[in-house]
Amino acid sequence: MSTGLLTLLVAALAILGMVMGRSRAVATAGGDIRKLHSLPFFYGRFTALLTAVPAFLLIIVWLLAQPLIVENKAAALLSPADIPDGSSKALVMTDVRRIAEGLDRLTESRTDIPALKADPAALKAAMNAAGVALQTDPAPSVIEAAEALREAQGRSRLYLSIAAGIVALGGFAWGVSRIKPEFRARNATEIFTMWLLIGCSLIAVLTTVGIVASMLFETGHFFRLYPAKDFFFSTTWSPKFGGGSSLGIIPLVWGTLYVSFIALLVAVPVGLMSAIYLAEYASKRTRAWVKPAIEILAGIPTIVYGLFALITVGPLLRDWIAQPAGLGDSSSSVMTAGLVMGIMVIPFVSSLSDDIINAVPQSLRDGSLGLGATPSETVRQVVMPAALPGIVGAVLLAASRAIGETMIVVMGAGAAAKLSLNPFEAMTTVTVKIVSQLTGDTEFASPETLVAFALGLTLFTLTLALNILALYIVRKYREQYE
Image (cartoon, rainbow, N blue to C red; front, side, top):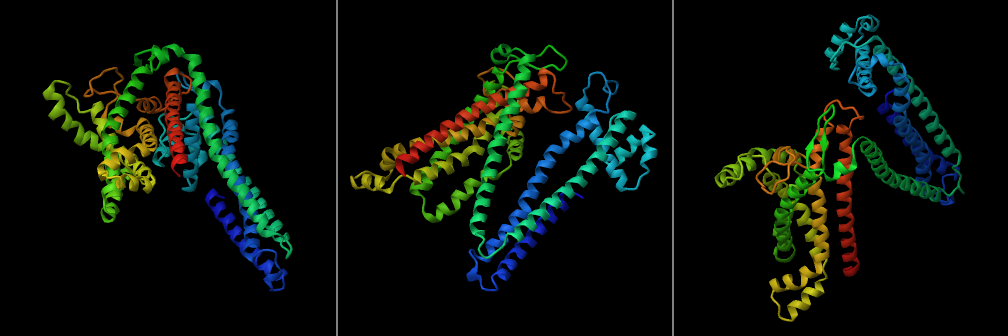
């Protein structure tokens, strides 16, 4: 049974539990709901929660643990002779998974699987025709491992269906059996819901811990293969798969900070001025359409911004400024990416600053105007100093957004890792190199691949520090003026 169908069946059983629980509660009270401790709805909700939540938790845990167990058993069937020179077991397991997927598709089309398994070339052709790309004829042991993986996945789905069905039915039966007029269904439901919410909160926390732990683990592996001193202090970035790489992070950090600096030079003045206009000068009618129009920029996909940088902004800067001034002849440059990224970040600065300015107490404005100050003097000398901590927090949050951008930099700034002050030269950032180092079939055993985790951890630390600083400033501001 597929996971989707199993999910629908559990959900249907939970709905049935809702109806049965409610009707049984009314029946045990003899039709007089005043004899019940709680409203009938709570009895049905209690039964539905007992039916659905444990079953869904089992499905989630099972699906997370299944690949580790099933694929390890399939990988055990591979011998060292099955791993070509320059490859790894992980790459071979990729082919095993592809073949297992292809065998499933061929089985659905009623293809003669035993005959194909006896002829690797015919199997490869059939796989490619079924939409599963194979580059070489699979070895017999790889085919055997794929067949074992497919069978193990089928058994796992069967066992999951049985186990989830038993858990759901058990929860359904237990919930119905607990329904009595004196049962405190509302209290039990609220406690159950509270623990469910706590679990959801822990998922977010544990996800963050897992991300950090995985980056720390792989970064530690990288530094065992490559000197940390060369990584942090070298000014050369030249990865070469196979050895002889120079993996200095300084050019990447410089490009990241340079692009982000230009983006903030564009976004902060424009966003701040628009926020002041919307909060202090615009009428309600004007604000009603200007503010959504500005925030539309936040909903545009970054790939669209990248195309805009590549096709429009880059050639425009090259033809009008860079070439006439002798500063460069490439449409890919730091200035191109910075300008477009600044446009993208404007809604972050504008929206947050607008909310912060509106949060300044009206009494401060009234006092200033009552003393004879003009509206512009009130904004400049009263409102802005009061809102300054919050505005700084908004700018830092926008900076962390700009630092983590990838697509605009790929299409607007190029991929050259260099140290230069010329904003019309092509440069690159940390995020771009993370993508480039992990593109294609990669083996997580070489410094050239593992360096992506060290870059990611560095970027994570930088953006985390900015976010913590921004949150600290915003909270301090809120405590002062709320």
